[in-house]
Length: 313
Length: 96
Image (cartoon, rainbow over all chains, first blue to last red; front, top):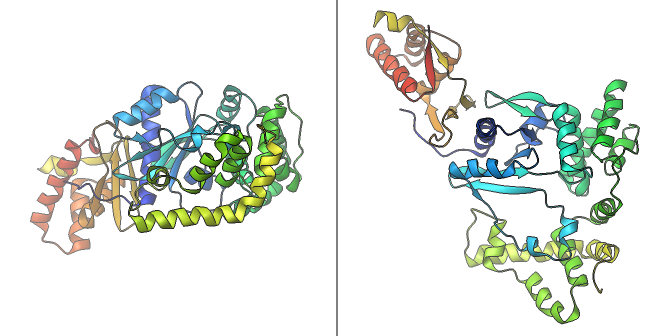
């Protein structure tokens, strides 16, 4: 009989697409696979290995889907992360998914209930993307995926969220080339999709770079757009989140929060590094990496904190 | 065994698999709660690839004998046993 062997990441990612697709089908839940292998297959992202599965679940059905995953041995990665307890910075973090892991699968499942940058209501966004859905073969089985334009919007929004990252620069360059080469009907459809999903403004830098028209659309959420801009213009890092939180927190609680920001507990550190050693050497390394990152981003984080306008300052 | 050898085998539509030419990893999503990924290497992986090409047991055995330079009668029996194991696991079915 065939043996169960250690899965490689690339194998796990592909097979997990098939698993989630099947579970969603059994539960009668509509899902769209986004980013990763499906985006690569549709040409919306340059080929590169993925370490997780991204799936957008239809609104209000994420509960049954995650229950089905849990019945298969998957568990939520961080039931409550330190950052999810942020009182003031959480609106800038654009929480958008729940992460699932499994001891025998070397990949994460990111189950999205929305996608940052789509400012229209979740139902409207899912409906617009579902309307344009396509089927992609992953691990030799068909899975339902956002179509090429939907993937362009999603990959574009993901890259614009932290546009300074090298991999995101590569993705944006790729998308500009792709959009520029699209025939006019597809470019017009891209304009419409952005408008329908409330992404005209958030995608504007990408669309304008490719000469795609930007239509104002019917969905406007000025506050969400302000938060999006505060984040994207000032590097959406944890440094920014901590600084927004620190700035807005009352003075008497600032020292304790500052200490917390500097020295995360072991559990908090390990929550983002599942599978790594919890030994003191690795913990020190992870802590030092946080400080280096903070040193790199603190100016932009401060600018974002000032723009956030939250709390007493 | 005569008839069995002429049956064409097919992959179950619920079986996902990844083949990097070195090994094949399968997942039967037919019953996702109880099935785990299965690893095939060597001649087992080759049999899987031949099943995916829609060959009969005889054709599969002939190819395995040639590719792995095995003795024909024992290899044919082994292939048939393996196909039945795959069938019992819900990974393949006989296409009549």
